[in-house]
Amino acid sequence: MATQATPVRTARLGRAVGHEPTAVSGVVLLLPGGQEVSARRPSPVWATASVRALGRALARAGRDEGLATHAVQYRYRGWNGSEAHPAGDAVWAIDEVLRRYGDVPVCLVGVDMGGRAALRAGGHDAVDSVVAIAPWLPEDDVAATPEPVRQLVGRRVLIVHGTNDERTDPELSFRLAARAKKANRDVCRFEVHADGHGLHQYRDEVLALTTDFVRGALFGHALSRPLEDALAAPPPLGLRMPLAAGFGRSLRGS
Image (cartoon, rainbow, N blue to C red):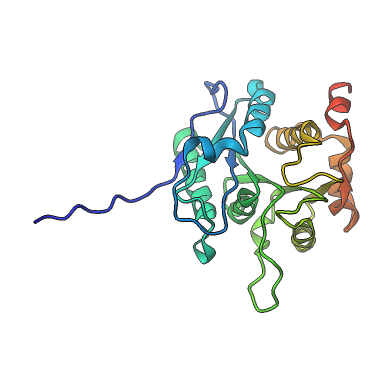
């Protein structure tokens, strides 16, 4: 009796957020959160929940620039130890973008576990920039191999973290940023004071900061003064930059 082969599970690239431009000149890949260990496949709705607002904001801001924005649907909900499934799925998604759109610059924007995936996959040749929001990172362990940072050389990197985050430790993202800054001066990190993991209190400011960074990195727009200052400042100043209330309003008024 013939046995059926188990179908190979593959990652997927969600449909473009908003209107997909006729001529694509840059791509944002949205990498959602997940769980430390899980072999379950995320549903499309679950997969995009944590990055939906970011996707809409970025698609709207890049509409006239030829920006295509897609969410990556992972094979598994979990990071799953050394398998690092979401990071591998991010690399697959970058290759898929190049197959679809040609040689275009890519910005990886990750939330929670997706932030770690974005940082890991940032070494791909097509990656121009990386945004990690409230990234889930492993605890420091002298016996373990440190989270790599050399792959980020030559990329612009933005990390954003709430100081009251009880799910992912903001001190760990600061330590990673400090190591990355030694290898790559184009690293900055913003702290959202008194906000938690979801960054709900300063949602508009985080969206505006991310949009400003992505438009600058992918399309050469001038960065806002806070981002310029954070990138130029030596550590720890540029890695503990406070995100001011009203950041988005100040950009719209400038």
